[in-house]
Length: 461
Image (cartoon, rainbow, N blue to C red; front, side):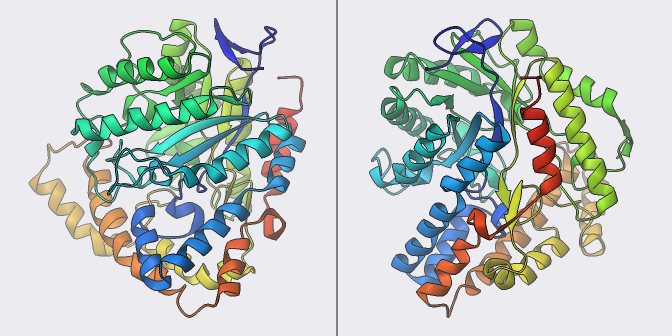
């Protein structure tokens, strides 16, 4: 049953090709600000919540949130849609703490084991994705990074811890046939590109020594866009591209139409996919899009265009027999197949706060970078005038300025306000907030579910 790479396909034990198609379980064991409504990065938020609730009650809330966020009903919904894969992002902090490095937290595996088993019962494969590594492997919130510095690449200590953790994970799941494989590092951002190649060589060797059978899903550098860093095509490996459509971002324009000066239509989507998958096609390895998907606005006309972007991407992937994992399954309303009910306990409590975050543009994902424009414009002008040649990694001066001002400074200033909203609640009220993310309490984005189900159950498999 364990999958393996055979040429440009993933195949089952009997040689039958398997195209992995499904969703990413974002915001679960790696919480993200736009997914569950908090500001800044996960560890900062958790620390503030512990200050308000105390250690035991914070643990009660977060454990219930993990339990409610994905249960048997969620696995059954995905199976009914025809999905055969879930990419599961995890934060290293569940399995190891910074104050006791290299010591494994056994209880951290409890929920991961549970969900892998739930998916297996529905004959759905899991891809374990380490989304946040010690020291942060990229510059943004989704690696639980409170700064703009990816320290992982600067300190061998962090790399040693990541290798050790993967040896532990691989040893745990090496005999599990419903684990499709391991995605050891989400969207790495090695600024110079000099450390990542040798590190992948070391990591692959270490993983293979523990578990020679499972597939490795390896992201390219610069947020899974640059594959030139790979010095060899490792055996039994899928090289993972991410393929977000320009017009599908929060700042996206009409589709077809112009977004920030670039014309985006189906032809442009296909050219972008061909560019992002060039390494895979040149090396004859399987095609798998680890992340993609537009965000939704609540405006019916705009959202119809976003669904068309998604439909066109799925048609393109089908044409190349590419597997995929849509980002993301569940959230508070920006992108998920299902989302917390605006009239449920969680959004009644945090709805105004989420609206404030949106007004300030405090989340990178979902921000147009035009929010609070009048207040931030003088600083942007200062940077443009005084440092005209500054072009920082990964996306340039405008993005870096917003990262430092909007997505770090403003976002971190909001953290105590989020945590304070949990103050004064009894245990029952805390559990009701967490249970707002249970599938039965959520709202389904029916056009999205229907679009995906149609694709997954069509003859394109």
